[in-house]
Image (cartoon, rainbow, N blue to C red; front, side, top):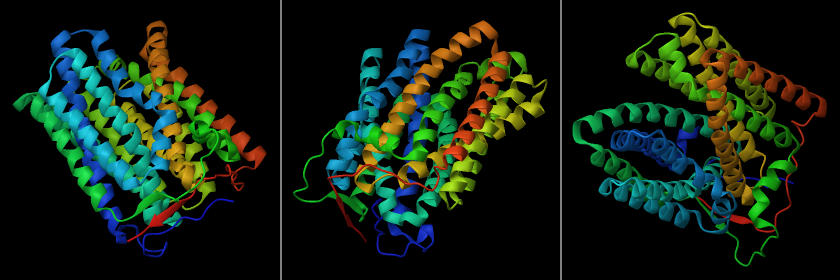
Length: 421
């Protein structure tokens, strides 16, 4: 049976923001994501200005993505095997050190190596926070906490992207990267201040196949067995349009740089609203419907954007894509966390994050090839049709197999004790 969650000193029915630790964690993580956005802008400008090479920019994007994939078997194991406070403090300090190193170095090789180090820290810290939050708020509020967190992160990312360009323009990339490093130092302090902790039970025996426990747990649950592969397929289809999005907006619709930025901001605003809305859902059934509705909305909106002859349908499509993405991300994250054993959550989240990032990398290649063959408009339309088809097929599978109510998960040998407020 699924292990019950422990709360941090208040009842599960208490308002989300009544939990002291959540008031520390969610804003601090949002600020850190703003710092990440600042750093990404600064590094993209550094590499593009320094080399002007498409290969160098591609290498930078790969440096941000590959460590998350490579760390799948290790990151979650670290999260589940050690005290959460120690893991989070050390991971945050590692990221801060990488950020300082990026500010002080300028060569392409050093930049790529330090970005990889930064992302190794993120590959551990992300699952660690995701596994800790249910311990803080209790089972009833996991969905709301996830929605609030993703909404805050979405808003912070928008602010960080804008601030990154301004900072680099005024002071150069060094200050921007030092700002990012300071957010990780702040996270290390917050991790030390958080009272709720995940701690392995003393003397617990080792599990067999611990490195693959996250993936096995995902596929042991009958609902996730359907939704997770569907999510991978959707990422391959849906994220392929990211490659040609700028071409659609600028070349086909005719908007300038400011218009392009505003369309992306509208999409980001939609994602914030979608995450907040989904955080209000309270059952696995409604969250499953949100996953399907979000996928279908993104697909239909991609078709609309591909066929758009002017700004209004383009913006409507962008906002709806963002809203659907916010729904999809928040609902999937909540389902994965709440339907997994507590002692396996670090590995489960690492497995989901890493495999999703791997699909994103493949999607970039597919988008480049498809865009070259079909052009931006046809790429959007084809991807949108396939995404809607993915939602329909997944919905049929969920309905026929009646998998929403069944919660199956792997037996686990290692337990955790909660240290609350």
